[in-house]
Length: 269
Image (tube, rainbow, N blue to C red):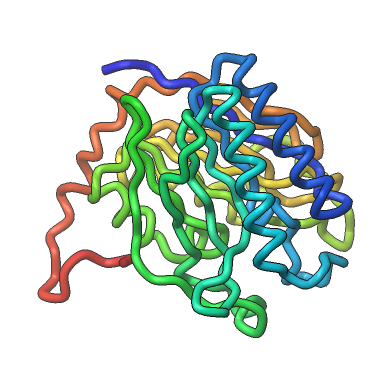
């Protein structure tokens, strides 16, 4: 099976919605220049993650539509697929979502956040369903922040549906004490980075997580191999693209496919 190059956009939290679009377009071009086939952005990067009190303007469906089309145009110009952490309105209700864009700039679909964090309940409507997307030789799924940390069933559902890679856009801001982790998934760190390795190992699939860059943030962007070992991580607090090659032959999905279904069917949907 082939090798696929992906990029994780470990960017600073955008200063404004317009700055988010500009930063996303620039990162798309940079990722394409680096030879990546796919670039993934953090949770709600456009227009910015609002649930923890950041001064993000009220959501505007017209603005979001224009932003999504602008970024899709950049993807088409660069010839690269994009997984964009963003928001969308469904029947008048706001959802956290990821927009998947093909390398020709076409809109391939959405993966809404199904398992909201309790802090998000007052702002967002939960989505439903678990999608997988295919771009070239790569089939991938998406789980968003809290659902990937706390609900491993969501990852397994995507892998059982065919995903060789599961993308995990998230947002973890700086901690009050401002401590900066030294390495990845060290014992003194929170459980989150160790969970990344578990999500890969328990499904025998690639797992890639992406956060905004911030001094003192407890997590960073990283890619875990299907055996649960760490392929690479972006140094904590350091902005930039994390670009890596994934050997798709390693994503056997063997452990996920061995799951014995209950009478209720697949979990995580």
